[in-house]
Amino acid sequence: MIKYDVVIAGSGIAGASVAYFLSRKGFKVLFTDVKPFERAGDKPCGDAMGKHHFDELGIEYPKGEELEGLVKAIDIYSPSEEIRYRVTGEGFEVNRVEFTKRFIRLAQNKGAEYLPEVQVRKLLFKNGRVIGASLWSRSRGEWEVEADLVIDATGMSRALLRQLPKDWPIRDDLRPQDMNIAYREIRKLKEPVEEPEILRIYVSQEKAPGGYWWFFPYSFKDGVVNVGLGVQGGMGHPFPKDLLYTKVLNSPIFEGSEIIEAGGAAVPTRRPINTLVWEGIAAVGDAAYTVNPIHGGGKGSAMLSSWCMAEAVEEAANSGGLTTEALWGANKCFIDRYGAKQAALDIFRVFLQRLSDKDLDDGMRRKLIKEEDLNTVSLHGDLELSTVEKAMRLLSGLRRPTLLFKLKTVADYMGKIKEHYRKFPEDPSGLNSWLTDLQRIYDDFLKKL
Ligand SMILES: Cc1cc2nc3c(=O)[nH]c(=O)nc-3n(C[C@H](O)[C@H](O)[C@H](O)COP(=O)(O)OP(=O)(O)OC[C@H]3O[C@@H](n4cnc5c(N)ncnc54)[C@H](O)[C@@H]3O)c2cc1C
Image (cartoon, rainbow, N blue to C red; front, side, top):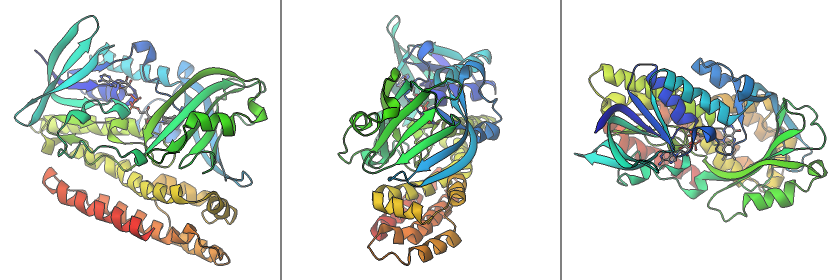
């Protein structure tokens, strides 16, 4: 049986980038995907990525074929569409396949072995630890490989994590209400789009319950837009495709437009996975719930989780082996850079999903949270107390019962969660009690909401 340092299941952006980050450090890496190279990373997506992700990881900006357009700002519309917030920030509309292929090629150039159209099937266990996996391809049938670490980068399917015993904390199954189910089309409109470097997000419980619908132009392609709609899972909401067709695509702007691509997919919108590593197995990207719970963007944070994983593997290898204890730094790396903020945003997400369209319109009209506060929330996961106090004053004239009055509770719990993540255990032995306390914070928050 061939032995690798690391075997990676899935070569979307998470799997391809972790393959690159590990192979450039000299590890012997095998990474596979059930899809062919030509379809690498083609999960249906809004394709938007902030520039800051590239700066943080020292990765070259997308260019040439990898780029569909530039982004200067995002406009967020209230349910009535009468109020608009503009959040400025540079970014890109990427070609997701070309972008993923870049990392596959980079990893191959550094010596990683890439096997497209190969499925990772069953995990192999020995003495309570994952020690490898079986692979399968149409041409070769089934065979087994050994590895010091197997990484699940299979996205929402979590093909390997789902095989683990339920009491392994890394298994951490996804509840349906903590995911967003989305459908999107790429369309060529008859007319060019005005301000093509501005992405548009429309918040509306009526049109996209528990989610939003979006209109993202590709500024390099006249009149081409990525338009989609996502709803919260597990709530019995109608299918997002039906909602997109009945509530959005009947608008005159889409008349006579041509469908270039269409597809649906789901995305996790919750706090990060309990732990990124456990007894010979690790997780990155959507499989590890690294997505932003508010806007559902996940490519940048998937790459961050991959980067943290590679750093931890290097550190563990230098200290004697890839044990859970030695790899524990992957958790701290991700939590410090993003995970704590992500958990705070999860609290905010739960609140937003309960607001009515009237609340959302009132909140935006009265500027309870302003554009600049939104920037702070999205950059740091903080809802400043001064903002909340101002918001309470602005609300004082409003007599009807509204969840908006709970903004202070939300801000408090966002702070509490972040504080708790700062106390993430130094080693695996403290994880269980830390998770019990975390659950208590969530339970208290839900009781008070
Ligand atoms: C509609 C929609 C819109 C989105 N919009 C944005 C956006 O605008 N910006 C953004 O940043 N993010 C967006 N996201 C999120 C983003 O698409 C994901 O976070 C990102 O693609 C996750 O990458 P990944 O590599 O973890 O998973 P995936 O891209 O799902 O890759 C997993 C790979 O694993 C492979 N695989 C599965 N099982 C196996 C197996 N057993 N063996 C081998 N291979 C296997 C699959 O074929 C797949 O290629 C959106 C998501 C959706 C659904």
